[in-house]
View 1: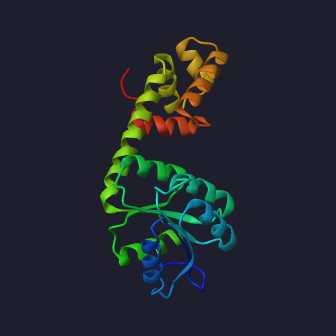
View 2: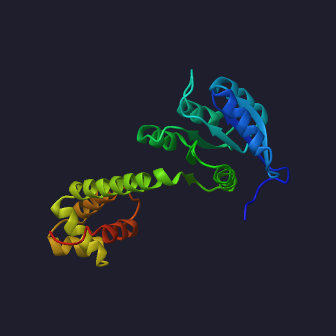
View 3: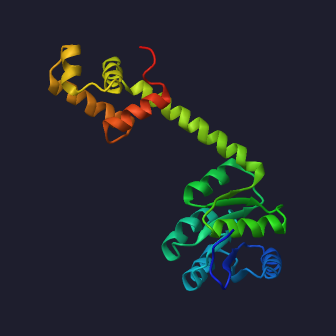
Length: 222
């Protein structure tokens, strides 16, 4: 199911709580396919270890003295770019959650997760998947849906009535010359309108513009 090096998945632990790091190292060390290659109490030490060991996965607490876990996620991309980060934290907080994901984390788990969940998350992340704690999954989905809806509304508002008309004619397969003749415009004016439409819809060609317009219902109504 998972693809990783024959020596196992290398893991870096980053947390300012010594007892937690020691416990995690002992527990993960029981897994034959996982190798804890480093343990760090803060971001500074973590970056040194990561640069030396190039771990497959880093378990990072989001709040630590000095550089935060968010800052560390950014910095790891420079010193160990293939390392994939799972945030392991006590904070079930939207601010930390979305900041972590935006910074590049591919996993977000709470410290209440049991060993089986944590070890499986490490394997899945090493295999290229993303993992979220069940308690935060719905919030991520909701934020994504809200963001997409807001983007759609904004794009619709950007198009003028004339541009929507031209987009409908584009969807009917009409050429620039045919659109110009139907709307009593010059062909150059039509080309300018189409250029504006592509820019506003953030696409590179007519086909993409029409597909997007159909998907989002931009061709309905006036």
